[in-house]
Length: 42
Image (cartoon, rainbow, N blue to C red; front, side):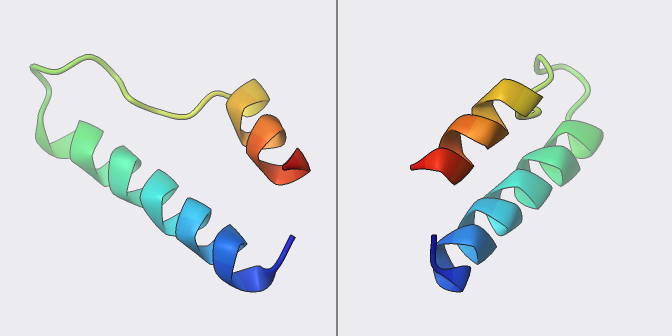
């Protein structure tokens, strides 16, 4: 897996975390560990 793809995933993950903090009305959209591992295997 190249660093750029990993960076994109990391940024989108951080973005989803910050998004959850700002909007408490929406359900939590945090990536689960299985999802992260699945992405890293691709």
